[in-house]
View 1 (tube, rainbow, N blue to C red):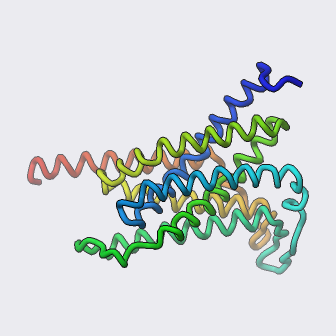
View 2 (cartoon, rainbow, N blue to C red):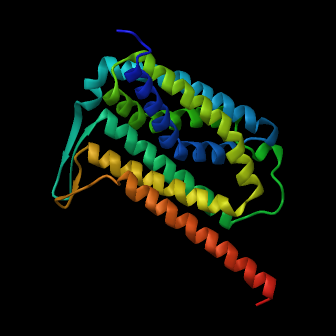
Length: 254
């Protein structure tokens, strides 16, 4: 079969679009996480983190193609009157990712509430290596859905690989712009952190669904992408209206 057929090219475009859309929340995490590094290192952190993640995504893609069954096999069960669940490797990874993202968002929100006007000293910054590892690890967790969706659309490894590489390059291109925007518009950091918090909830609900989790007999359903984007739209709308209202109050000295 020829590689560059019309069908494969259409599939490639769909996969690139999928990578871009599913990478938005990942891009926000990268922008917020890179701020923990020294300012002179932030650009390098973002590029190395995303670049390393691209390589590991390709490895993950190959691994999933070869051993997809192991990710779906049940590792252990919980069966009590309160909680019932069948955990597999996929569900555990997604759940851990969701908990970590929620922890990160809550920690940063609490840090904002204890805002210190004094600039950070050099030794207050997080290790560059730790930030890069964190970005790569979270990128892989975010990758599962996009890679599994890609495998559902095509079985051509090269097409999926090209889509992953182009998607990663788009993220590298956009990462600096998003970070600069957040730096110049500090109030949007709060919005970004709450969006990140919702991303954590979405991942936890997805992980619980993959584990067929029930609490008091009620099945946990995953948060749909439609619900997620609607909540994000409402948050952004509230933030815009609140900022405009605050400007009007300041302008009229109310």
